[in-house]
Structures are given as C-alpha cells and as structure tokens.
Length: 107
Image (cartoon, rainbow, N blue to C red):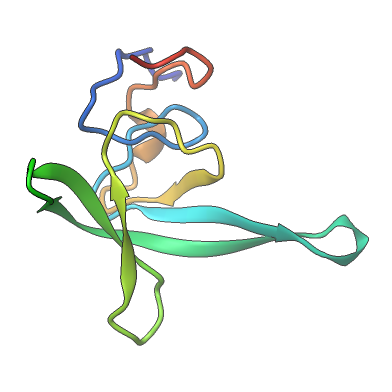
C-alpha cells in the first residue's frame, strides 16, 4: 500500500521520492547523459552516520562501492536529493517508509 506522508526533519536526507535515506541503503545516483540520450548512473552505499566539524554536524559517509577506502560525506540537513534514488535497503522495506513531499519547501 502507499506510504504515509511524513514531516521532514533537519537531521535527515531524502531521495527524489521523498523517502528518508538510512544507513545500509544502496543509492542510484544520476551521473550524466551520454550519446543517444542514454542516462548513466552510479551506485553508492550509505556506510555510517558521522559527526563532523566544530558544531558537531550530522553527516552520512557514502561509499563508491569499489575496492578502495575512499568515499564522501553528505550533510544531513533535511534536503531532498533530486538525483538520488534508494534502490535497495538492508530490510528490503524502503518502499514502505514514510515519505515527505519532495516539492515542499524546507525550512
């Protein structure tokens, strides 16, 4: 059944469908449009929550899903990531998570 609409929280991130991104999620990220209008994507995994900076801000550490240890951080500021889509999660229940309206302005 359809997921309920939820209210956005500042220490979260949301995919393009308004689902909250959580540790363990596999994300499909738009990369570029190639020849013949072919869309290319990358796949990433949310590895852990991390606190960074002097103000101790909340971040996710994102892995590139390769054999190196490098990755990047995404600030958990309540924003909707329009180029990110959750395609798999640890419990396989990501499609049942409450959603926010991705077009609604955030504080």
